[in-house]
Image 1 (tube, one colour):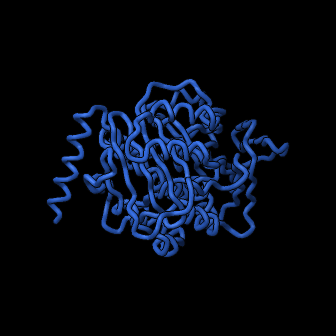
Image 2 (cartoon, rainbow, N blue to C red):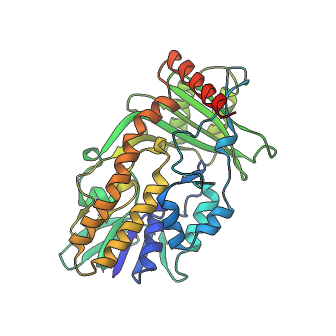
Image 3 (spheres, rainbow, N blue to C red):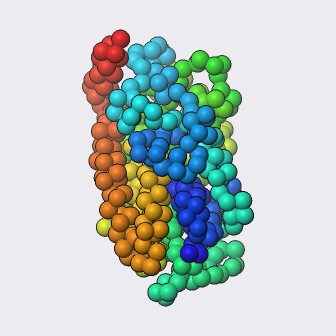
Length: 370
């Protein structure tokens, strides 16, 4: 089939790879000028590891893995270690992979067919499904007909909006915001990452092999700002992280100076179906579980894999293929989305008492492993 994939994040790249490996011709478009490589390290867990073997990139990923999370610690207001970060709630199995995003994305792009038609700074402006094909008009002025359109353009998916309706019909805000910013070269090897908890907010300084990253979450009602306006975002961050403890003020200032400042709400995409006619959604566009799930990458990989397999099994029946794809992917999504409430309580405890209780739980968990 001739297929258009919208979005060159993990889901879009994984979909393109798995579809190409089954003989389909894929055009991949991305609204950004390049593939985004900034961000905190990514976890690939459980069954998704078996799927990346089939994609032919397992050994590259394994060679690039890190153990940043297990080297991260919670600190108090004076920067003193009070507990180690616990992965007891996260891992599916002992061989789960943690990999820096700057390493993962080139591995994925390197697995694309050499002659893949990839178009950056390009979005869909019109979609017309006539039953036999989808006529697509792109922002670069070109238009074409495709047998299938795969929307992999994230939680704020334009493809979903054009085909299924407005974002507010499907995306549920969780009352939490996420911020990420690379702020410079990494500290010397062996320097632990550090996380500071306060009621309703967390800020961390993470060490990867390539860079230092400030990452944080905070609870808040919905904000009426442009999330892509660095000045507006920095003003919000200064208001949220007011404590003059640990390195909070230094890190907030450095985030404001970062060219890679990323800020967004944490939400979950919940849809009764992920397909309509000849358009199907994968990844966060279909079923975002929120960054706090720690499973977005694994879901992007499994969904893309199940979709490609279903299309191979039902080459002349898209409806049957989409049904099988959803039946296989839904259990993974339901598990990831269900676990987010607990993850919010652990990562962003709401009260001082909750902070104290959680850190005590982590210390007890540490002691039990010694």
